Amino acid sequence: MFKLIDFEPEHALELMAAGIKEETADLDAERVELLAKFPAMTGICDDTIVCCGGMIILYPEYRAESWTMLSSEIQKFRVDYKMIKKQVHTWMTQNKIVRLEAPLRADFMPGITFAEHQGFKIEAILEKYHPDGCDAMLHTIIKERA
Image (cartoon, rainbow, N blue to C red; front, top):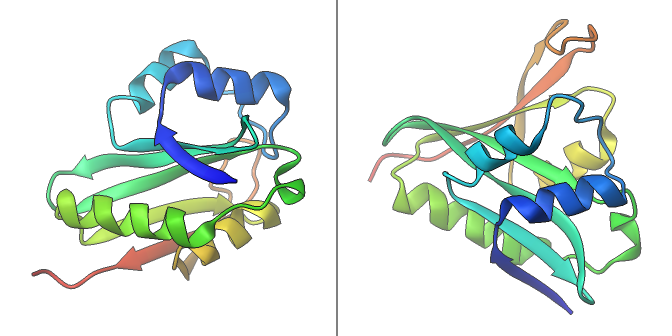
């Protein structure tokens, strides 16, 4: 059974140690601590951490960037994407976020699929966005102001 719990930095470190789907060489214990200062959750299936994610608020009451870490074996688990989508939209409402961005590696299909399940749409291609020269596909969720 899938459930969401409050994110703790140890969850990301545990997930990274077990194997994740995307290279996160720039993530270390200090950066993971920073992620915990913003809205974030951990997804668990059968007592196994399968994903972590949240949003970094860049401009309060306007813009945030989404981040996600996926287990290298996430496809083996029954992830409740509707539950995650509901949480993302709740955070957007609570924090008055109008624009949520996710600059995903163009070669990272699991992340792109995960984002699409949450309601993200492709807005642009960002050439040579990542340090290794890989393009990013900027995915966004845009909400109307209340």
